[in-house]
Image (tube, rainbow, N blue to C red; front, side, top):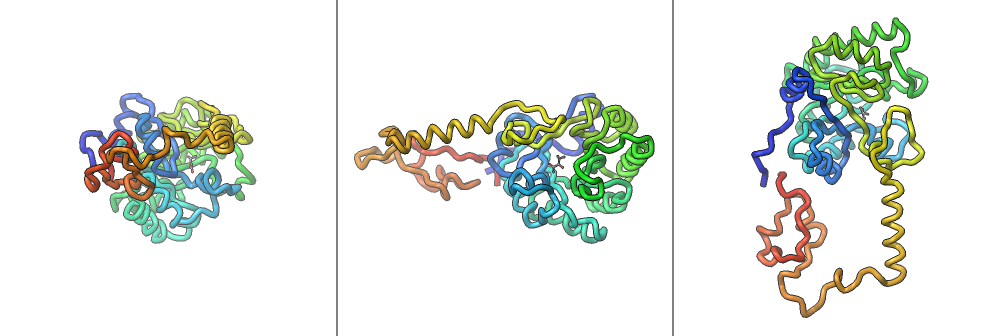
Length: 314
Ligand code: KIV
């Protein structure tokens, strides 16, 4: 069952936000549970970033991420999202070899993953691909500056655009991508003065990460914002929580209670004498996305029924 009354964020919403000077918030998500939470909190854009290669898969960079993995995560995010625009990241080598590769793979993110736009790293060299995708009807978000897929060429994750030559090149790239039809542009790891200049030169919104306050919006990796990795402390990340500590504390408490036989207690156990509405709703039925226990099981409406996590989507 899908609700129709939550207005979806689209390319037009984001254009209007820039025109009206409303800042755009964007966050990554890689699964339905996180997507649902950041969507409910009101984020405008959810990026299924290839950063999943690092924060989900534990790799040292994003290069090994595959199309199949991106599609899998996009599909999960799309099931948890009602309002935010869903952007799927084009992984390394899914578009660099040819425009045809790029078209086919962008199409897969939309068709199989449920993405509503794709993001690709690179400047004017990818203007042709962006333009073809625009004509096909696939919105493209560009990404310039510190582009993690070019890690080896950049000699590491380094701030870009500090020299006048580099800055001019990035400005030219930004203009070329706008002219090619990109609807938004991520500016990563560049001086804030340059980000301000690029933002003022474009009619499409810029979304910054490590690019200062003058962009039209901001993006962070959701695990960084939540403080899930205590070792990762780059300058551009602000932590809004310390979930690493909180998760460990909760899990330690669970372990202690299991060892001490404090959990499960009577409140969390079933009794053979219980009334019928106390029916359990196991994983795989009502917990599955779109699984409607209320429709299938007349007894499942009782107070002990586990609520559907994603009641409104596909
Ligand atoms: O993959 C990603 O998460 C990104 C953002 C950090 C912009 O590209």
